[in-house]
Image (cartoon, rainbow, N blue to C red; front, side, top):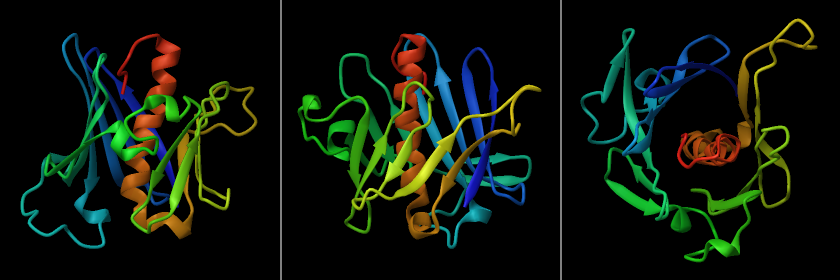
Length: 199
């Protein structure tokens, strides 16, 4: 499943829409940026879900006739670990709990982040900083998801928007892939911009 990513920005917010090949929105990511808080809200459209989660009766967001449910919020801190809030705050954990390495951030490097999927398997985001293209691998070191940045301009061999390509074998955990991608890509942007929490 290849999702194209359309981005828009304002002074206080960066927004990304993840679109299916048919042009329908599947995910929306809103990154709120101000002097006191940096939070990223991740939404999924009701129409793209196999079934609406139990207990979800009203949308968290309605936009252009599409209803969304918030699947996660990433809350950035400069002096404390990043906190992940899942399903509108029903469950929360720190980045050191979500990603392998435990409480000690020295147990993992900037260039990779490991997490355990709902299938019990270990997956690793490998960050290629020079090209800004994080890729996700399974324990067999097979690529199962890859981000490709936008190719713009007349000199680009194949112009087009940024994409996130998710292999069929891991589509069942697409929500977690998008959530962890948002965090990992945030690491790249933090390095590029020189401050914490651009996502």
